[in-house]
Length: 240
Image (tube, rainbow, N blue to C red):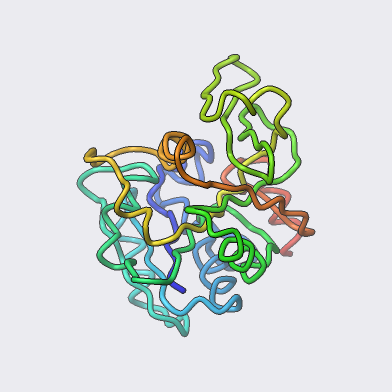
């Protein structure tokens, strides 16, 4: 199975940490975030990985060229325009497409002990278009899942904004926080909009009206969004 690591973000939440380097190269325990993710994906059996780049892209490309991670790593270069997650996947499509194998998507600022094998098996068994790893944790934004863990909408508890994909299941649906880890069947590439820049969240919510998109309710021991300063500090304490 192939994977894309979304590493093009500006890292604005980390402020001083990303003034002279990209978020992907922020250090935890003597390793940049990107290395933590690449090593995890290799351990999980991923054979080919694409890394998208934008902010300080030259530094990421140089880092990848100087290191051997034991798997094939290619770059999808967004230096000229940041494309968001959906646009990033679309641009990287020529490097990721497969006739039968799904593609894994993983945010570079996520540290997790999730089993990619279990996520993959759950996705394949469901026959769905995509499967989103989610957790029962506190945040402002939630995906909502109805019967059989089907994606039915999204809500921002802070602003009250709602996006409803399946109205008759929206009220009372389980509210789960996205983990920044998801897997999609190759058919997804045929269903992308003509736009160059768009988010995967918006795409999933649009497609959920007519396609099966499910949640994988992850209960693994570790999940951290180290793109947040307080979580980054916690992670550094853990990896001392």
